[in-house]
Structure formats: C-alpha cells, structure tokens
Length: 474
Image (cartoon, rainbow, N blue to C red; front, side, top):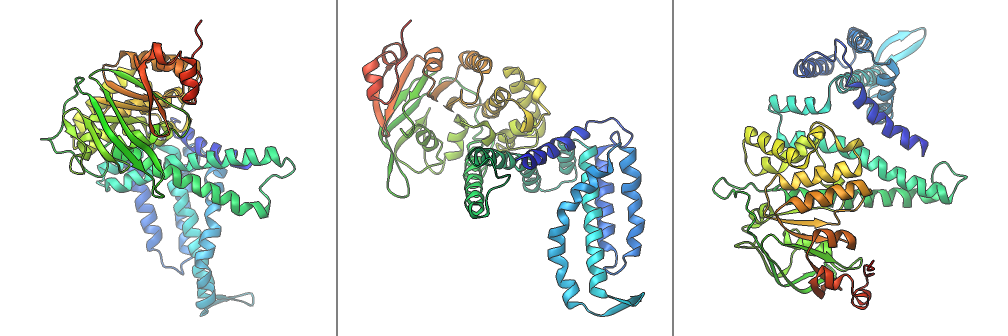
C-alpha cells in the first residue's frame, strides 16, 4: 500500500520539479523538445554493436541534470523500471546472435550480448532524456508545443489521457489495496491466490471508467463535428420533452419503462429515486449514448441518428464523477475540448474558455491539472466543460456527490444563477428543494410521482413508497 502511494507521489514530484526556475527550466519548451527528439533519434541511429560510442551520449544527462537542480536518482531511478521489459524484448539477441566479436580475459563476447547491452543503455538514456524534459517543462507547455509541431491531435489527446489516468488507475489500486489490508492486516500485498481476483477487478474498474470517459467525450461532440451552419448560439428558451421512452439493456432488462415528462423553458426539475431507479440511464438515453424507443425532443429538435451531435450541443450532461469529464492535461484543454470538436478556431476557443472560467470564478484553475484538485474544484471545472459548448438544457447527474458543505453551497449558488433549463438527478433532497421548483420521483424506470418540491418531498408516505426518505419539516 505504501509502495502504491509512493508511485503517486512520484508522479506529483515530477510535476513539482517542472515549476523550478533554473537556467534549463527557462529555455523555451519548443527548443527543449527539439533537442530531446534529436538526442533520441541520434541514439537510435547508432550502430547496434557500438557500445563504447554511446559513452558520448552520457554527457547530455550528466550536464543537464545538475544544471536543472534535479537529483540524479529522480531520473535514473525511474529508468530502472523499464529494464525488465527491455531485457525481455532483447533476450532473443543473446540466444540467436552468437557470432564471436571479441575475447576479453578469456571471456567470449558475442554479437548478441553486445547488442543486448547497447539496447539497455539506449533505453536508459532515451527514457532519461524524456524524464529530463518532463521534469523541466510543464506538461501543458509540452502539449502546446506538440501542436506547434503539427503532431496529430489524436496522438496529443492520447498522451494527455495517459498522463491523466495513470494516476487515476493508481488511485483505484491504492483504494483496493487499502480495503484488502484492512481485512488482512498481516499481509502487505494480496496473497498469491487472491492476486488474479485483485487484478481482474482492477481491470474491470479501468474498463468501466474508460467507457464512462468515452461517453463524456461523445457528449462534448467527439466523433462528429458540428458544421458552422449548424453551430447554435446559446439560448435559454429551450424545453425538454420525453414521451414514452423505454431503454433496455442487452439482456432485455428494462431500465427505463414508458417514461414521459416535460421540462418547460428555464425550469429546473429534480429527478429523484432510489439506486437503480434508472436516473443515469435516462440521461444517457437523452444524450443518445444509449439506444431507446420513444421520443426525445430538445427545443425544436427530435433526437435522431442524423442530429445526435446537435442534440448533444443543446443538451449538455454533467456526469456524477468529475474524473470522467476531466481527462485532458490541463483544465484549459478540458474546457476547450468541446468547442474544438465543434470546429471553432483557436481564438474563438480561447475566448469561450476564458468566458466560462470567469463565469464560474475559477480562473485560477486555468493551467492546473485535475491530479491534485479538490472535489469542489473538480466539480466546478467539470461544469465549465459542459457550459463551454453553450447548451440550452443541462442534465446533471448527482452534482453534489463528493462535495463538502462549502463546495456544495457554492454549487447551489452557481446553479441558481444560471438561466438554463435543467434536469437534475440527485439523492440530495435538501439540495433539490433549494435549486428546483418541480420534482419527478422515479421508480423501476417509470414516473412514480411528480409535482412541486414543497408538496412531494415532504410527503412521508409517498416518498417511502418511492424508496426514499422525506424531508422533515422544521
């Protein structure tokens, strides 16, 4: 467990090192990236048997590391992690390349052994060069310069998501390890007979998170750009209407059953119900993430396969876990993700991002990563990513989850100040009463009851029959 936490701290420590102000840190990021790329290319061009020629390449890390005031062990200690993988990949060199190259003190050195050593040294030096770049350059500066170099956007997004979710995956593993050790205090690591189950659950968790992340990406226009002719301006006179909506899971289980509601222009409606009532499924169906039958209308648009991207611009969704929506390297890029998918130019994107940051009062989060942000900061940043596509209708899934009382109060004030039509799924009935005028109680995928918050949320018998607990009158 301590080892898992140390891995997280290692990720954070590299980020902290990049904030220093040494002569190396002050060099332009593009120049450092070009030098790193050239260094690695020259390394790869070296003859596979020229071990002594690699000695010249030692000068780069030996000179740059002290100038950047980075401990040698921070760089070279991390390179050791790669050796087992490289050794496994290069072991065939020793086995199959048996030509004699040199005889030293009676010991025969084969071409395979020499090329194996060259592979190890090349890997250590290449990884060291990359780590030096990361330790002396802020991550957002690296991704920014990759765009300057016209690196494909897909590749940049992949780097950003790997950087972001390595830490999230380690956090998942740390949580699982903590729970395991609480029940097995004598064991530092899972017993060998439990290791398969442990790794399997971690894999399933990562797959589940990947699916949610992809859904969040699609909700912000990923996978299909909105043409400028179809690009809509922000409007607050849009209604949400659902008629006879039914959603079935692949095993034919009915998750949403003949559901019908109407949310009028500018209304805020709470959607409450016990776990498994179908609230999140309903919202994903509105976004077109899940297939459904029935009618979904947002403003003057009825959801079809042809206008699904436009629907997702008009109806923005805030997911329950903000980590599912903050998948880029910085909050700026997270907020910019939607506008970029809408085909906006970078100047317009910048204006849109800055405007949403000001609207929510989170300008200080602009260049931060979600790695070390609080739950309240993540929630506000996630809300900004939704508002950046200028939706007319907002779908909020458990917006107060993970929030402390102060962050919850700030969110209430923000939502009350926004003019959008909202459908808010929540277990927090006191929150629902403060933000919404109307409430829909959902049970077994269908509408169980609906009415004003004042009438429904205080009705003890009705709420109990709906699987909930009524608000107590003071």
